[in-house]
Length: 566
Image (cartoon, rainbow, N blue to C red; front, top):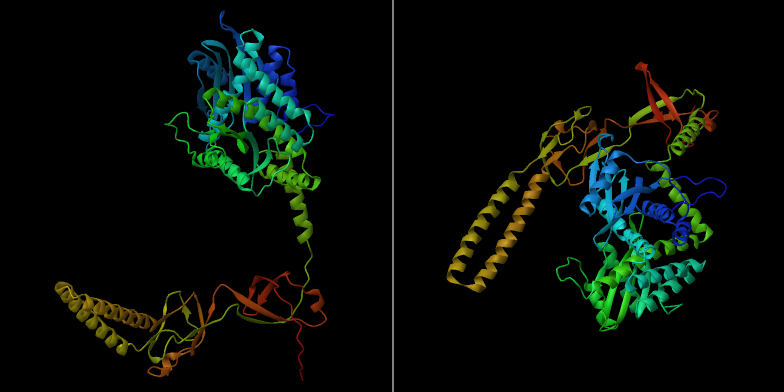
């Protein structure tokens, strides 16, 4: 929710704050004022809304006309008009997709329409266009329109004198709770007052309010209790109940009204049995298509929730939740507001909007980059040594005799190329020996199985495992007789072609390799110029053998060295 400057006209995207919209909604005198404020609230709570219209009329005469637009005074196109007409004709929610003007690869725009029905009478329709939406966001938007249409229904029943006692009580309850939330400036006082009034009006033993923090729902207010122990088992169980509803993003009730419902309520059942054995209802709190918290309603032993009471809980949560969220955000400390505001600004700059901010940030970054690296050339002449940045040694993996050598100093080798081969005749014989031994043990093992000799089976099984382990060890030793290059590089030292048949010991250095793509340049800079050389500086190297080509390098380390020369 964005706040607007008091000295500037509010843009359609920002509009008045939610708290102001709720006040305007409760103070509306005409149907047009009510529809305009109500439409602004719906478009505020549904993400990526591009256009919206509310059409109202007399169901008896059949005359309907638009009474409110969002953004204000901006007409809608034929697509949204056709969706509104279809929803009025079918008397149910309608969803249509469109990507005629969209770019390839972008999510299609979605048009939604939802009629205002009181009984079988059609009093109008709301139609909106979402710029881009997936299935989940479309479902949340349709649910928002469905929940929000109850306000329109209440308005018409009040205006035309068709309110029943139940609807009158429902409206008065919602308005009283909204007024209770608006009355207190501080969040904790407002939250405690609202949920305590909820417990009284809804005949609940306890009502709890929780907000999501670090992927977990934490209880922040409890009815009839100004202070409570956040580490108690009750508060922990209520938090788990809220997590169960938030994870499913649906209202969860225990006991279930519809046994065929796919919703899971095991945690709700556990809370009810552990703390009172009454009905439990948890309603997630939504704003802008995202869940930010939950309300949990608990009743006394033997009392549950029927469908109308659940709908009332959902309506109250939908109306009161955004108010409490707004007060909670406004009640944060200055430091918290600063850091969260900064993070929101960063996300906004990196998001799909605020093109001017993006351009300004790019220009600032380019200017900073230019002034950081725009320096002149400083030439230093120094004696240079060129060597590989990394040198790895290849050692003998085991004691043995060199049979074959495939590399000499100066040779280029590839990763996995054979460097040398050690004598493996003894290991081959040993391997054959253990293969024969395994075959013998397997034959004896089968005979023991045939004779049902359990003791001999256990002994032969152990001997067979030992022989297989010996065979695996010998196989690994055979693999080690062949040594390969660990990477692409050049052989710096090591010539085994003159030592064929010579014994080598384990760990003895046989070759030294250096990679081809990384080199280290050692510059012997004179002490008069060394003060100008710093780590991180860039330069160009000209080799005496290739004077027509320059090679770039970066100074990684500067080390003072004292040397005595004659």
